[in-house]
Image (tube, rainbow, N blue to C red; front, side, top):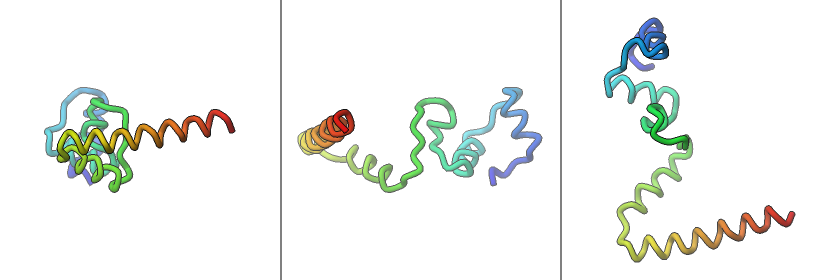
Length: 87
């Protein structure tokens, strides 16, 4: 799926060689993770494409609308955590 051999993948895993950006991206796609996750820049696996699309749309919003959205999200998260703590 990544367009390279198992032997080469083994060399990547042993840190003997480093894949090109194109091959690293293919590996990330094959593993259904983000390139950031694959290279250790974050620990979040975005398997839910709908969430990722929403995050991409949020980054395009004006600051005031983002803040309103974050206020609603924070309230929902707070309420969820409170319910979880008391159940």
